[in-house]
Length: 330
Image 1 (cartoon, helix red, strand yellow):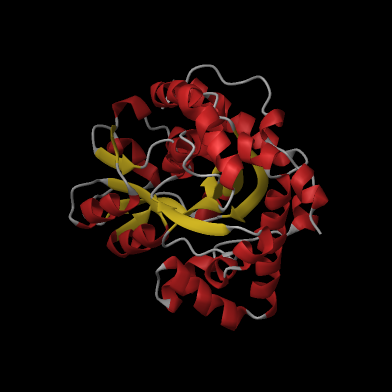
Image 2 (cartoon, one colour):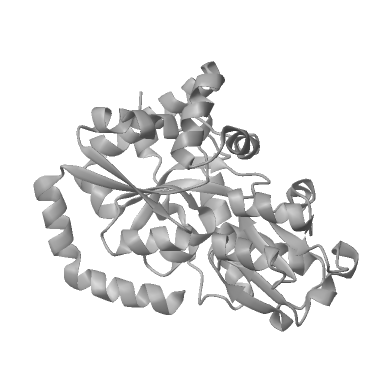
């Protein structure tokens, strides 16, 4: 993680000015990162091009497998906004100097990601230490990775003895169902399919009681935020409108969301039922943009430092969260 971002940041210092100038000169298209099979309220606005109309630009939606990939694309100058970037990849990216910031909370994901034990394994929370020496797959440096580590530390597992493999969600899905893994950790569609072939190591409720939170953020590049603040405000306003539309007319919204997410309606609604979306009023509180997100980023970075997964965490993450755009939103 650290070596990757160091490399990208060096490359970015060479090409960053050119990328920024080119974007500022044309600003005819904004590229937004998102996940497939991850249904969110704003996908009505995505499908109906509300963002294009409000922001006054062509909006390109580009699918990614993980929040780490989103962060990489933002550092490289290929993406201006990431919707639903996991708080963990964001925390690790800014710890390594990535020039990005949080402007809002995208979704409180609850039990939408988890770790599943393969059905032929006689392992549960009571004997979780038997995972030591076994093959476990997870997308590294993601919220799911963080939740896995926190859960295993609580259960007394020696993390250093695990055979941890970094895989994309869909590759984990295939390997798990094929019996190649003792445990797979993922989210969305892949998690739903894995749960048909095993059981969760810890339930979402158990994780919540341990204080293991999970949420995704709306991240923007610093250059884009400074050059086009009005577009960022409009993006947040449209996102709020889409959340209210889902609340007011769920039947109509859910069908559009499912299609945009690439899921059958039933499967999309199962995932949606695990999510909570918050509009401006709720976001501008101490739980989220007024302190909660900043505190949680610090907790995540400190935990990864303690586990030897990153170098030194920053002393303060407040500069990486900017509530001013939501404060200007109507």
